[in-house]
Image (tube, rainbow, N blue to C red; front, side, top):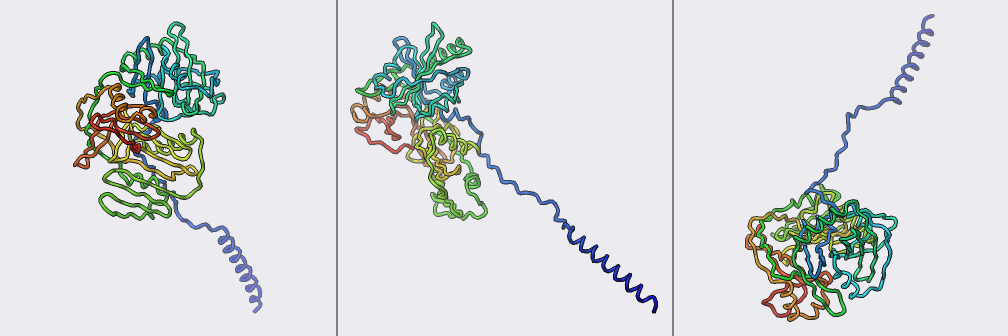
Length: 434
């Protein structure tokens, strides 16, 4: 019995030690969950990305030589001129006038050795850094739709003029270049390859510059492909797994998420997406172009030669061009329209077809002067008010839904609207610009 008390004491010590040991193990225990891999967000790549300078490039160049006009809408010619400007340095930007008259602009453009670039929409001066070297801190926060270069072939000195037709503003800047002889050679080559143009003067407004003689154009037949609509759905909807798809007919499909919705027309190969969340916020011209361009370009969604043609602070529009000519249609949209809220798409309307040439044939088109005369007979009011007269393409469907045709024609443009000049039609109403 004399050993009972010592045994109890040792048992108590052992129990206390075990208690302390298990308590420590519980406190320090870490379960083995294995390696938890983060699920990567799928990156959607639709096509190759493009440079911002490609979507804000001018659509027409006009040059006034010695008693002659030359012009071009060729993408190659325009890009060659823009590329030659990369070493230009613009400085000493100053306001010439903010009340210029159309006559003043006409005189500037028709002055000998003046090159004029015409843009479809006003472009912020700050974005001209895409074309040449400028000091952004010294650039005024204004936009322009005409850019005129005054070139002195004898002194190799040049000056630039930024013109906003609607606001009647004109700024000028000095141009310095590292290789003036090379720049002159490029400009000379472009001018020599350009088409003979003529000036159409109008009372109390800006002149028009059109092709003088008959135009040799190309009638295209395209076998259309398309970007998988699923790629756009995945890139736009925040929760792909919760999307509800509904097929209503051959021309109508709908995708719906928690707050997002997309209406798809498989026959026209276009969709309209909307996400109403967020607050409206008006952006500056620069912010609007940069934000919409970055969003579209991030996934390579400029699936053709789309160029900036409209902006109102909330929405930007990019028009499809083919071989330097704008494309319009009543059968399918030919424009990307995008509105942003808080850095995310709010409304996004666009085509998702792609064009692959299957056939082409040369087609003669009447001269610009002839088109002007027809318009003068059909609609003198439109002739006076229009922004420009351009050669473009009318995109049409055929009986085969996979075949589109592009028919060349003259178009009068006015305030985001267009009208086709048809010699066989008397009169004519404006159509919604597609």
